[in-house]
Image (cartoon, rainbow, N blue to C red; front, side, top):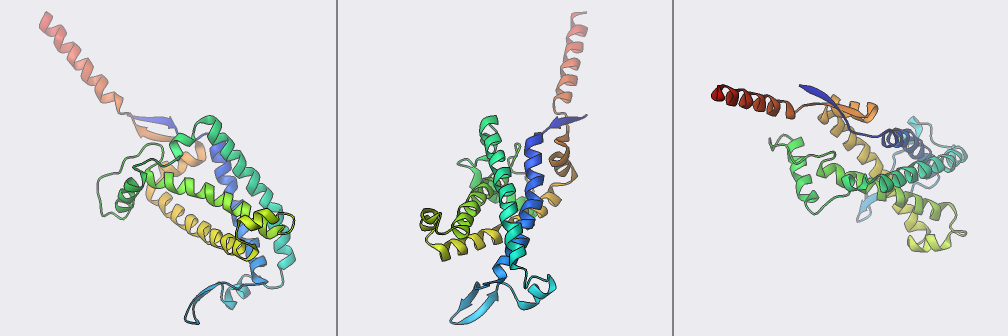
Length: 238
Protein backbone atom coordinates (compact mmCIF):
# COMPACT_ATOMS: atom_id res chain seq x y z
CA UNK A 1 0.00 0.00 0.00
CA UNK A 2 1.27 3.45 -0.89
CA UNK A 3 1.42 6.18 1.75
CA UNK A 4 2.30 9.88 1.76
CA UNK A 5 5.46 10.68 3.71
CA UNK A 6 6.65 14.18 4.57
CA UNK A 7 10.20 14.79 3.36
CA UNK A 8 11.12 18.48 3.00
CA UNK A 9 9.99 21.41 5.14
CA UNK A 10 8.53 24.59 3.66
CA UNK A 11 11.57 26.70 4.56
CA UNK A 12 13.96 24.22 2.99
CA UNK A 13 11.92 24.22 -0.23
CA UNK A 14 11.58 28.02 -0.19
CA UNK A 15 15.33 28.64 0.14
CA UNK A 16 16.04 25.95 -2.46
CA UNK A 17 13.84 27.46 -5.15
CA UNK A 18 14.76 31.09 -4.37
CA UNK A 19 18.43 30.21 -4.73
CA UNK A 20 18.05 29.00 -8.31
CA UNK A 21 16.87 32.27 -9.97
CA UNK A 22 19.09 34.37 -7.69
CA UNK A 23 22.22 32.41 -8.61
CA UNK A 24 21.24 32.48 -12.28
CA UNK A 25 21.01 36.30 -12.21
CA UNK A 26 24.29 36.49 -10.27
CA UNK A 27 26.10 34.40 -12.90
CA UNK A 28 24.45 36.30 -15.76
CA UNK A 29 25.39 39.71 -14.34
CA UNK A 30 28.83 38.42 -13.35
CA UNK A 31 29.55 37.73 -17.01
CA UNK A 32 28.93 41.40 -17.79
CA UNK A 33 31.52 42.33 -15.17
CA UNK A 34 33.98 39.68 -16.28
CA UNK A 35 33.81 40.88 -19.88
CA UNK A 36 35.58 44.10 -18.86
CA UNK A 37 38.71 42.05 -18.11
CA UNK A 38 38.31 38.48 -19.37
CA UNK A 39 41.84 37.46 -18.49
CA UNK A 40 41.36 33.80 -17.63
CA UNK A 41 42.00 30.69 -19.63
CA UNK A 42 44.01 27.47 -19.62
CA UNK A 43 47.34 27.64 -21.40
CA UNK A 44 50.28 25.25 -21.78
CA UNK A 45 53.66 26.57 -22.95
CA UNK A 46 52.01 29.74 -24.21
CA UNK A 47 49.36 27.85 -26.22
CA UNK A 48 45.80 28.63 -25.13
CA UNK A 49 43.69 25.49 -24.74
CA UNK A 50 40.57 27.10 -23.27
CA UNK A 51 39.60 30.75 -23.30
CA UNK A 52 36.85 32.00 -20.97
CA UNK A 53 35.00 32.99 -23.12
CA UNK A 54 35.28 33.20 -26.95
CA UNK A 55 34.19 36.36 -28.69
CA UNK A 56 31.11 34.76 -30.27
CA UNK A 57 29.81 33.96 -26.78
CA UNK A 58 29.79 37.64 -25.81
CA UNK A 59 28.24 38.65 -29.10
CA UNK A 60 25.50 36.00 -28.89
CA UNK A 61 24.38 37.05 -25.41
CA UNK A 62 24.91 40.78 -26.11
CA UNK A 63 27.30 41.07 -23.17
CA UNK A 64 29.74 43.79 -24.38
CA UNK A 65 29.14 47.38 -23.25
CA UNK A 66 26.95 46.31 -20.30
CA UNK A 67 29.45 46.62 -17.42
CA UNK A 68 27.43 49.17 -15.40
CA UNK A 69 24.25 47.12 -15.82
CA UNK A 70 26.04 43.96 -14.71
CA UNK A 71 27.46 45.62 -11.60
CA UNK A 72 24.05 47.05 -10.65
CA UNK A 73 22.34 43.65 -10.87
CA UNK A 74 25.23 41.82 -9.24
CA UNK A 75 25.48 44.09 -6.21
CA UNK A 76 21.69 44.11 -5.75
CA UNK A 77 21.11 40.37 -5.94
CA UNK A 78 24.15 39.54 -3.81
CA UNK A 79 22.00 40.63 -0.83
CA UNK A 80 19.25 38.18 -1.78
CA UNK A 81 21.89 35.48 -2.19
CA UNK A 82 23.42 36.25 1.20
CA UNK A 83 20.14 36.55 3.12
CA UNK A 84 18.69 33.40 1.54
CA UNK A 85 21.82 31.41 2.35
CA UNK A 86 21.97 32.76 5.90
CA UNK A 87 18.31 31.90 6.45
CA UNK A 88 18.95 28.34 5.25
CA UNK A 89 21.98 27.88 7.54
CA UNK A 90 20.09 29.24 10.58
CA UNK A 91 17.18 26.89 9.88
CA UNK A 92 19.51 23.91 9.40
CA UNK A 93 21.31 24.57 12.69
CA UNK A 94 18.28 25.22 14.91
CA UNK A 95 16.04 22.52 13.39
CA UNK A 96 18.74 19.86 13.67
CA UNK A 97 18.54 19.18 9.93
CA UNK A 98 22.33 19.52 9.74
CA UNK A 99 22.59 15.96 11.10
CA UNK A 100 21.02 14.66 7.87
CA UNK A 101 23.21 16.87 5.67
CA UNK A 102 26.75 16.58 7.02
CA UNK A 103 28.87 13.75 5.56
CA UNK A 104 29.99 11.02 7.95
CA UNK A 105 33.02 8.74 7.93
CA UNK A 106 31.43 6.41 5.35
CA UNK A 107 30.05 9.10 3.04
CA UNK A 108 32.93 9.22 0.55
CA UNK A 109 32.96 5.44 0.18
CA UNK A 110 29.18 5.31 -0.22
CA UNK A 111 29.26 8.25 -2.67
CA UNK A 112 31.37 6.09 -4.99
CA UNK A 113 28.69 3.39 -4.80
CA UNK A 114 26.06 6.01 -5.63
CA UNK A 115 28.04 7.02 -8.72
CA UNK A 116 28.37 3.39 -9.86
CA UNK A 117 24.62 2.90 -9.35
CA UNK A 118 23.75 6.06 -11.31
CA UNK A 119 25.96 4.87 -14.16
CA UNK A 120 24.14 1.50 -14.09
CA UNK A 121 27.40 -0.30 -13.32
CA UNK A 122 26.22 -1.46 -9.89
CA UNK A 123 22.66 -2.76 -9.47
CA UNK A 124 22.48 -2.73 -5.68
CA UNK A 125 20.94 0.48 -4.35
CA UNK A 126 23.40 2.31 -2.03
CA UNK A 127 22.41 3.22 1.55
CA UNK A 128 19.71 5.88 1.35
CA UNK A 129 18.11 7.85 4.14
CA UNK A 130 16.71 11.32 3.51
CA UNK A 131 19.87 12.10 1.51
CA UNK A 132 22.36 9.64 0.11
CA UNK A 133 26.12 10.00 0.61
CA UNK A 134 26.68 11.87 -2.67
CA UNK A 135 23.94 14.36 -1.81
CA UNK A 136 25.38 14.92 1.66
CA UNK A 137 28.79 15.76 0.19
CA UNK A 138 27.36 17.94 -2.60
CA UNK A 139 24.93 19.90 -0.40
CA UNK A 140 27.57 20.52 2.26
CA UNK A 141 30.06 21.61 -0.38
CA UNK A 142 27.59 24.08 -1.92
CA UNK A 143 27.17 25.77 1.48
CA UNK A 144 30.93 26.31 1.75
CA UNK A 145 31.01 27.46 -1.87
CA UNK A 146 28.36 30.06 -1.09
CA UNK A 147 30.35 31.27 1.89
CA UNK A 148 33.45 31.46 -0.30
CA UNK A 149 31.57 33.49 -2.92
CA UNK A 150 30.43 36.02 -0.30
CA UNK A 151 33.94 36.40 1.17
CA UNK A 152 35.76 36.69 -2.18
CA UNK A 153 32.98 38.92 -3.51
CA UNK A 154 33.46 41.38 -0.65
CA UNK A 155 37.22 41.32 -1.25
CA UNK A 156 36.66 42.25 -4.90
CA UNK A 157 33.83 44.71 -4.26
CA UNK A 158 35.59 46.76 -1.54
CA UNK A 159 39.29 45.81 -1.53
CA UNK A 160 40.24 48.94 0.43
CA UNK A 161 37.42 48.98 2.99
CA UNK A 162 37.67 45.20 3.48
CA UNK A 163 41.43 45.04 3.11
CA UNK A 164 41.72 42.32 5.77
CA UNK A 165 39.30 40.09 3.85
CA UNK A 166 41.23 40.81 0.68
CA UNK A 167 44.43 39.84 2.50
CA UNK A 168 42.87 36.59 3.76
CA UNK A 169 41.91 35.75 0.16
CA UNK A 170 45.51 36.15 -0.98
CA UNK A 171 45.08 39.59 -2.52
CA UNK A 172 42.69 41.16 -5.00
CA UNK A 173 43.75 39.16 -8.06
CA UNK A 174 43.70 35.79 -6.30
CA UNK A 175 40.32 36.62 -4.75
CA UNK A 176 39.01 37.31 -8.26
CA UNK A 177 40.37 33.95 -9.48
CA UNK A 178 38.70 32.15 -6.57
CA UNK A 179 35.42 33.98 -7.20
CA UNK A 180 35.53 32.99 -10.87
CA UNK A 181 36.40 29.36 -10.05
CA UNK A 182 33.46 29.15 -7.65
CA UNK A 183 31.16 30.42 -10.39
CA UNK A 184 32.34 27.65 -12.72
CA UNK A 185 31.70 25.26 -9.82
CA UNK A 186 28.08 26.43 -9.58
CA UNK A 187 27.54 25.75 -13.25
CA UNK A 188 28.86 22.19 -12.92
CA UNK A 189 26.76 21.71 -9.78
CA UNK A 190 23.64 22.83 -11.63
CA UNK A 191 24.27 20.42 -14.50
CA UNK A 192 25.01 17.45 -12.24
CA UNK A 193 22.08 18.31 -9.98
CA UNK A 194 19.65 18.39 -12.90
CA UNK A 195 20.92 15.00 -14.15
CA UNK A 196 20.54 13.51 -10.66
CA UNK A 197 16.99 14.85 -10.39
CA UNK A 198 16.14 13.28 -13.74
CA UNK A 199 17.61 9.93 -12.64
CA UNK A 200 15.84 10.05 -9.26
CA UNK A 201 12.45 10.36 -10.93
CA UNK A 202 9.22 12.26 -10.45
CA UNK A 203 8.65 11.25 -6.82
CA UNK A 204 11.87 12.92 -5.70
CA UNK A 205 11.19 16.06 -7.76
CA UNK A 206 7.66 16.32 -6.36
CA UNK A 207 9.06 16.12 -2.82
CA UNK A 208 11.11 19.28 -3.37
CA UNK A 209 8.01 21.11 -4.65
CA UNK A 210 5.22 19.80 -2.42
CA UNK A 211 7.27 18.59 0.53
CA UNK A 212 6.10 14.96 0.48
CA UNK A 213 6.78 11.75 -1.39
CA UNK A 214 4.68 8.67 -2.07
CA UNK A 215 6.29 5.47 -0.75
CA UNK A 216 5.36 1.85 -0.24
CA UNK A 217 4.20 1.08 3.30
CA UNK A 218 6.65 -1.52 4.58
CA UNK A 219 4.69 -2.17 7.75
CA UNK A 220 1.57 -3.51 5.99
CA UNK A 221 2.87 -7.05 5.15
CA UNK A 222 3.96 -7.52 8.78
CA UNK A 223 0.50 -6.60 10.05
CA UNK A 224 -1.07 -9.19 7.77
CA UNK A 225 1.47 -11.75 8.90
CA UNK A 226 0.65 -11.14 12.57
CA UNK A 227 -3.06 -11.43 11.79
CA UNK A 228 -2.53 -14.81 10.16
CA UNK A 229 -0.43 -16.01 13.10
CA UNK A 230 -3.14 -14.94 15.57
CA UNK A 231 -5.82 -16.76 13.57
CA UNK A 232 -3.70 -19.96 13.52
CA UNK A 233 -3.28 -19.83 17.30
CA UNK A 234 -7.04 -19.41 17.79
CA UNK A 235 -7.71 -22.45 15.60
CA UNK A 236 -5.22 -24.56 17.57
CA UNK A 237 -6.89 -23.59 20.86
CA UNK A 238 -10.30 -24.59 19.55
